Length: 266
Length: 193
Image 1 (cartoon, helix red, strand yellow):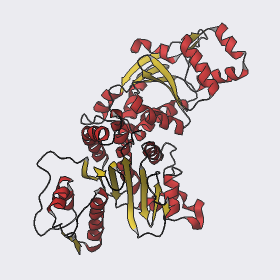
Image 2 (image 1 turned 30 degrees about the horizontal axis):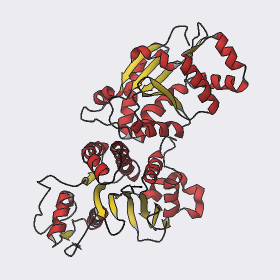
Image 3 (image 1 turned 90 degrees about the vertical axis):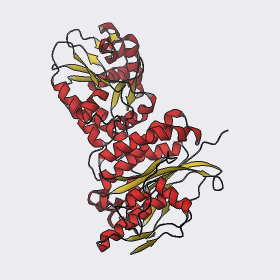
Image 4 (image 1 turned 30 degrees about the vertical axis):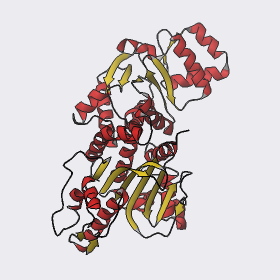
């Protein structure tokens, strides 16, 4: 199988992490690493390198030639693509991101200096979602962009994807009977995203996503969860995405996307 | 409950984190980490007397996420509240403003409340509580302790009497079995700070 990325002109954390997910699924299905043709565009290739794509892609794809690995110079990346398999990975991510996030959140987004803590907590909770609920491997990446044309301000894009069993699979054993025929990817997403349900009987569980939603709303951000054939979003006033889409192409596992925009100065 | 004063115990969560999990971690994040820290605190409490008041200090913790707030604060309280005999009391210290939403969220989700120092020597109730409980607790916190006369004044108002009983039952105030006086928890840990 070939993943042809030669004509790629631009890619963000969602695209990079999705490439890894696609390659990982294809590899598992065929029993061999799929082949990837890397972008011809040197800017895109350099950006993939700075985001740590090659380091992760080595575990998923085979290459014709060995791409440049890692970045030798100081990076402007907020959080390189990082694999999440264990709680130790979450600790490393939280420790690593604190130093970089502070400067970006204050200088690019105009957030108060203390916002690095809720930002780190948010990253911790979305990454734990993979370990606790997906029961499969996943990746996270984050970067700041100037959305000059689209929004007229800087944003931070956070992307988390996993190759686990998805929200419907995670919640099904505990909650599907209550929904009967209505149990689907979309009702599973509603149960987790809107009502904080989890597969655990412990009432202390399930607050992570609820609290992330609250924090994202406070920062006028967008958060979406995609799993199976559905996607649910909490949509801010600057975006016109529908809050729920059903009938999408099947996505194994789950994707959590968060976009945090710069504060609008009064 | 015995007739003695509660055994005071100071627990530095930052130190427990490094000792019980790994010295590499500086943040209180992930549920297994929170669980390990809670179990280490419980082990420490087992060495205390039958009646204890613990000052759980978060001052040296950089980040607390919601999972750890649930494990280290909510589940710790819940465990001792489930006992028939109210013999362990807790005050949480060093819960700075950035930690506040995590601790408050974890407590509210389980309809719990705790006495928390949010700034040096400024204590507040955090979590789920009624307006009556808040009012009576504020009065107790201002006075430091209530003698029989002050308690009788509170108990002359039915809703305040219920609120005081609730604060005692929820471990948010301490009634001395010897003197019958009701003490603000903050005063009982003052010498530990």
